[in-house]
Length: 121
Image (cartoon, rainbow, N blue to C red; front, side, top):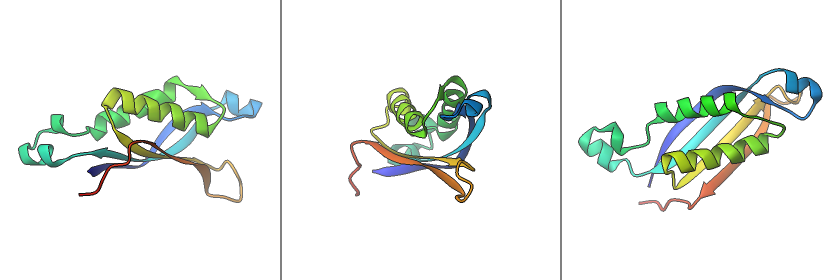
């Protein structure tokens, strides 16, 4: 299995547990690894035979704009579920970082894996 990568995708959303956080949008940074077999697309040079990372990025940006949650964990879980359902992704690893949430850290966040881990070939 191969991996399609999306690195450091910035999205703006309402997220946080404090009252003041519920009144602003904050930037999250996302890294994704999405399992797929790229050989059919590579052989035919046809984007319809692979995961369209531009379409996936557009969906993630829309998801972030449509949802407001308290926890980064909730954001990650719901986004992973949405992507797996809408793009038929068997396995993914999603890392969500919230820069500036803790002054002494560049970012805090979570990394989750969902689905069946792909076998290497």
